[in-house]
Image (cartoon, rainbow over all chains, first blue to last red; front, side, top):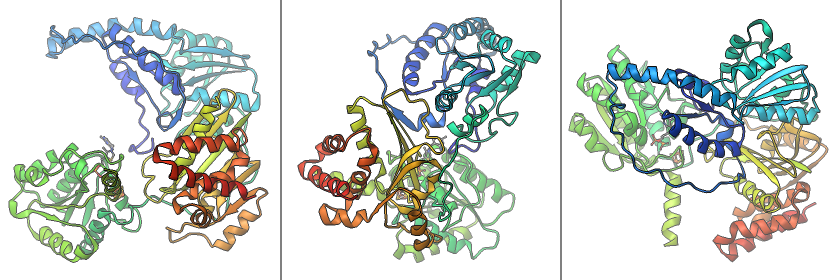
Length: 420
Length: 190
Ligand SMILES: Cc1ncc(C[n+]2csc(CCOP(=O)(O)OP(=O)(O)O)c2C)c(N)n1
Ligand code: SF4
């Protein structure tokens, strides 16, 4: 979850594409499965999906590494398999369907899909990291009588699930993300067993699983002996002190306040924090590049002023096409490319368009009189406000580029320079 | 033996170096270890937290259960209270006593202190002042680690000292020494 629009489960894509999925339950499996996935992919000549959930992506543990294999021979395809004209694609689909029994067989025999049984009071299907939470609860509360089926390889091993249903009246499905397996297990077992999980309320329908929710679903509640604190306030993230995005928002908010109905469409990066206090400036943040396309749509529908704020890296990722569209339609928008010379939010990597933004905008057809570069610092705010206002008043596409390096990369660069 | 630690504070205060040092000591001691942390945005003044689990046996969950933590190690007093639901009944809070106020609705400090003092096991110290006195302001997190060291148990104070030497080695002897001084000042506080 964390920063997606909602909880999106990649296992749907695996099913949709009819390919195997591996879902590690811990760091060691994540490491081992990468090798397994490549081997499986070579053998089947199909992609294999490795599903990593939030918690696994944001945690670490020591892993035993194996010997590195040799690089595959360079072997460019000579057939027509990559020419996906309808005649060829149809045959490929039939071939893919033929491989399905192989994939199912592999999952039925996979060491990653295995039973651990201490009884038959409750059947538990634990997918990926869900297995860890079940094991944690079993150890914590010394739970007995569970017939646990660990699932880490798909397609679902149907016979293993039917075996579970033959022994247990009730099956709890523990999976992170959406109730993908819960739905499938229901279909597989029919009326042979009752299936419970996220859909039936034993586990919460939203949010990441944790040891508390999984213990509860198994009938054991974790407690907070010292309670919850009273003297507590939320501490949301903020733009760094001295960040240029701050000066951009200060100027922009003041100008926008002069127009009734002004909307500022945001995008993805550090500057998305402009949606939170103290600025609360943004009307939207949807996906990379949407600031420009949404501003364009809004302007075309009659909104004025319609302003987009986008980062330099996001602009080269997927803002340029929207800007071209706006130029072609002469939409009345003001685009602010807040250029901090880096991809700050993801850790300060280089940004693909550095030093090229004016040329890119001119190349896409923005009028040279309406591509303006400013330096976002507190003393420059009056000038930036004046320019924003002028460009809002211009009926057409304008681009303002406030440019000043991110404070974090600036400090890093200074440290490096000192060392040399 | 098993120890579950919650490290917390405000983004930029240096909790991740504390995690690195405990992690180094635990790995050297041959313990199982899992560390889970909140991602991104951590440089930007928001609350940050990391679950660190150390054990002689296999560890399953990456996350600590409610009531499961042995020690909350916090760079900031209010942040230490945020994770109270996770603290076990005999657990310790080891925290800096100095509020970091970057929000308009920060609680009244007297009320906050009263709540902390009402808890059974709390160790507090103005780690910034101590770090400034014995080493340098940047070593405040090492003062905190020193304060927490006796409660971590599963790795000894000496093993943590060794880990500080290893982790800071490439920054030179002077940095190693000042971090050790800060750490020892924390250990001395009881
Ligand atoms: C499709 C997609 N790919 C990758 C990401 C991860 N991501 C988050 S912010 C960001 C780029 C931010 O850089 P920039 O626009 O320059 O803004 P800054 O953080 O520097 O202010 C990326 C790549 C994403 N959110 N969506
Ligand atoms: S990391 Fe850089 S761009 Fe992001 S808020 Fe801090 S100074 Fe601004």
